[in-house]
Image (tube, rainbow, N blue to C red; front, side):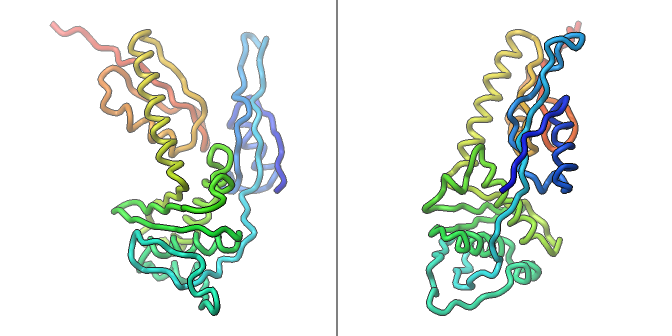
Length: 251
């Protein structure tokens, strides 16, 4: 997969350049932030932001076996019915809108089969989200650096399973509880930073994050009486600033 290192005055400019270089929209790119960049003082000591960009791509067919249990949350062996599996276009299955969790699980299982990975795929559905979990071999490859490969799989499954646009839900793809560990790490970071802001009475800006990570930080501190959170920047990746709440004296 072709990847390029691209510089810009800030992360947003670098991402914009990457979109023009690959001639695709932002959601079609894997973005790895190498350096946030520094504005410097009066132009002195400034450093450019640097990212590594590549196109999200999985060279696999979405023709997938139908030998999966329709029970939500149940496991799906990728070897069931291997002698003479019936197949169906996954996007056609998704269009029915009858069972989004089953559709998403079937699509993902088909992708993993074409990647020659022997994995178990389970699904759980809530009123607004479908959680898909992968267990088995090759999880390090599936997760990738900072979860980028997992994000790419999640993007593809969301696009395919929600194709009909009816009853659209967010589909979260996880492997070996990576998302859970990531969430716990972000919550711990939020609590640590909030304590420092409370003590120093000065705002602290965190590094650039995607929308999902920012939401975790916002939710973790939404009931904190000492600090509040704000997003700063444009585009997909933004910084979160943790700001102290200035209390007014009441007589």
